[in-house]
Image 1 (spheres, rainbow, N blue to C red):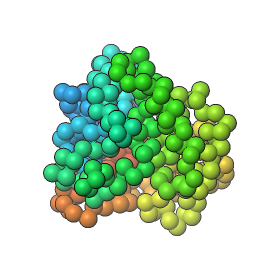
Image 2: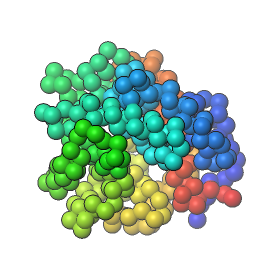
Image 3: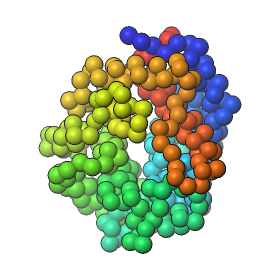
Image 4: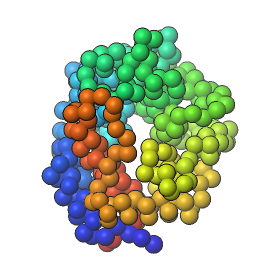
Length: 306
């Protein structure tokens, strides 16, 4: 079994400490070197606005300073791991309040980003068109399923919306999908059911497995492209595998280790078409985020040299 060597691990740490955002620097210290949670929460607080939502480039592919539902989900992905700390709990409460007040009745959910995203540098897939939708919004579950997962998990903090009704809507949407075109929509459902596993019925599990079998890319030659490889769906040894063979999970882990050994970091395998000067900065930020995330994956699978 391949494990990431100590020199390659140290090279990745050094890269983040020299080039990463304060958030990724704090996450590395917290998850690998017994760093304080306060540094992580202070870094996240820099992205939270007065309305409780998150923006300010937290999702590096759009530089909108205003809050957006999508950037708020990115923050929540971190905050749920720190909810036992009072500062994180307060940040979560404010985020839930923001999400309740930005619910769109006609949409039956949220649009990923507001139209104001167009006024700032961004990747083309975040451009809001005349119909008020970005490309992401054509798949309702992204980010709505994930948002509803947070509202359900923190139901006691939700004062305005009928969370149970929204949950039924999200589950029905998943079960009625006949074709699976967006892996990101399924990622959002996986995050949702991680939070509220009691709603992952046999019928839901079967639909998730159909989706993942349809979307997962096993061809290693294509993993250098922007594709949903096995570890995008299986995040830990204890995770459900949804029919993904263990040998393919291990091949994917080996592939990531080889990339670290070769490059010392994990770089984005996508790029912008416009705002190319800003993209260079966003690329650095993404490299930090992807490197931290991948190191955590390797740690969970015991793929780091001790």
